[in-house]
Length: 458
Image (cartoon, rainbow, N blue to C red; front, top):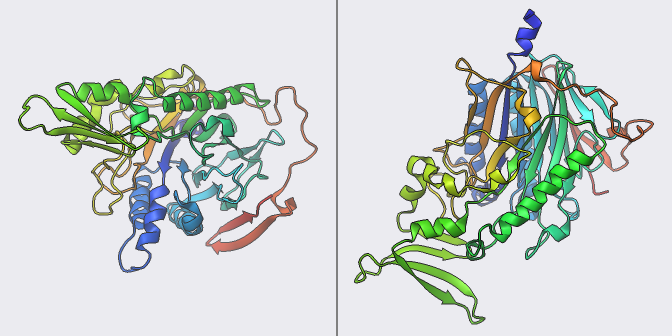
């Protein structure tokens, strides 16, 4: 193996998924007191600290709920957050970046609140991003940074879609969908990176009624729809890593049976005769009638909540973590970390679960069989699949990361300009040609030029 090939095979890749809705909401509540660090400050410090410690060559960060759950009120904090992240990464010698921020909440048929952030270290010389309109790769040179924000529909170096409205039964058309990019490293290794956000469990009582739950079925339908779309489109097939907030939940129906064996249930009903609360009372000592578990629409509280669900990183619950096993087209490395959701949104408490949902591994990093061939790891450089900020408040979701070395010999050849049965457009739509696009900021930072583009609603 040549010296160049050895260097290419030594490339460290870091993928991170993080639902960041909480850090914007708490930012709003903390904004009156500038003397105290906010949850966003703590999040950035812990997050960047982990990236600094790892020292990867290529960093992909997939964010969900960018701008917060109450996005109309808190999306104003996104630009400042993105620029802080970019500045920190530039200080760590990441001299190439692309940031895609879907934050136009005035376009409900397209708005996903997804953010795809990519950073490339200066040691990586050859890095190209794919254009889904021209089927060509475009090189990203040294000291080249772009933030694409607002309504990003016209930017063709990403593919984005919201799930169809009929995929949202019994709930409003919320911000769920995917955003994909394609990359080529060292002129040979090509892979797709897909950020995804699937549907949540809207009601704990509904979720426990059947196995699988109606919500699990909705998630499966949406994910299969997404995978089918990629398999059937006109682009050459490439190894794919799909990571985001899958919202996978434990099989609540059987989990509750397992922890309420010696109990009797007591229901509370509304005036409409709907079950609004279920208490499970201990029968081991009938004279006490202690409540073991209480379930409400947005409440899930065990009398020994913290110890039960965090014991041994919750590994006893893995038998009920069934949703990821439903997809024969995707794989995942073993999970040995605690559930990633739902944690207290308390800046002084980074380890306690909220008593609102069954703790679960909502945030995952999965990949296709083709992608597995690109991952290199051994005893000298083990693959790491873990949480960021296990004891730090990172919001209601803990970020999840995957670290490995990129195996150049496992590359699948994907030619520039290649497509399946589709003619190539005459030319690429350039940012400067989009009538509604404005270059709102150009900043010199040493040798780097940061270009910030914001596009209004199309």
